[in-house]
Image 1 (cartoon, rainbow, N blue to C red):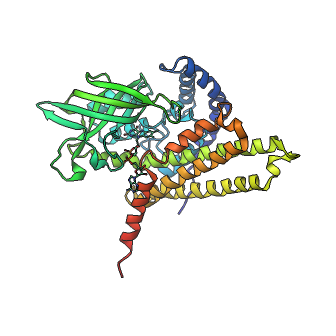
Image 2 (cartoon, rainbow, N blue to C red):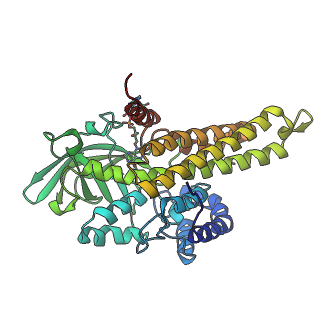
Image 3 (cartoon, rainbow, N blue to C red):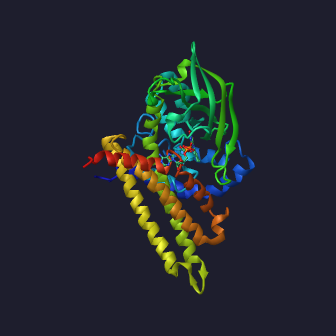
Length: 400
Ligand SMILES: Cc1cc2nc3c(=O)[nH]c(=O)nc-3n(C[C@H](O)[C@H](O)[C@H](O)COP(=O)(O)OP(=O)(O)OC[C@H]3O[C@@H](n4cnc5c(N)ncnc54)[C@H](O)[C@@H]3O)c2cc1C
């Protein structure tokens, strides 16, 4: 195993770090204020950050195809995702935010020339945004074979009906396209029953029913419940072949999970920094909190857990690059569990060290915790990833 990063990755890490400290972190309170006063439109400071990121060559860093993005492998992108994880603004500022990242990867790999021209190009330029609609309120979507929103072919059109929810970014006015995963052939094998269709968000019959807050926080532009009522799109909006929906969705999740996990490591690093700073500044019972054994124990434990999670994630990234996503399946499931646990654990302790201050908006910790908690569910609940690991482990052991 070799976790050494290439010169290109190291150069980008340095440049991204400078951008974060000079521009992104100082913009956080401004973003907060501007999104309160203009909650639906583009936030001016974010548009400034995007222009600046582009100027500095910090744009579409996640794309492994050098014609479209930075051309880095997963292992080389991992430290960049970690740096971005330190601020909720960084992924969008650099056009490296989910769900656009996964959607761009899908369009690049499976889109027709026409689909790429209409949707991929403006996504790459950060002019529009996109969403990915899989989860449904009426069925346990952890098991995607349950999905029942329908795709029916009528002549040269596809007709879509159903409900989706928790669809990230769908309420953003710049969200112009939805990648809709639906049941297209109920009689086929369970993993070939679903297809993926590109749906313009302004197509008649698409409706944002409501946005769903996470612990009261409206992250980004909202996670939405969406209704699809007799939505008609041309048959040419199908992504890939009929019945390939799952296979394509799976391809999207491998690198995306590594990005999520490295951002979680970055979040944990920032929480640890905040914890240490507060513990040194604040005095109780005649000495700094940092002199209390229990607080030192949390700090040490946080460092140990961060190092463990980072190493495991880098191993998963290395295995993805060398052997491909199928071979790295166990590692990818393992890091998804470990990184969510790491982030919630460290942020929770950092909140505790801050006392009441940790729970209010004066520090970023409460919002970070809300986001970190979602990582136990998004892109597969912890229990589902543990099931995958156990299944693999049991299959390796012959019954005696
Ligand atoms: C903030 C946020 C953003 C999201 N963004 C998107 C998005 O953009 N697009 C999208 O399509 N979805 C999105 N989701 C949805 C997310 O992917 C689902 O919530 C997740 O896949 C779980 O599906 P479910 O909610 O239907 O839970 P269910 O399938 O109902 O499962 C509920 C619980 O059952 C347990 N469980 C399930 N299977 C097993 C098992 N095999 N063994 C043991 N226990 C099990 C787990 O504890 C699980 O949490 C988002 C969710 C959140 C919270």
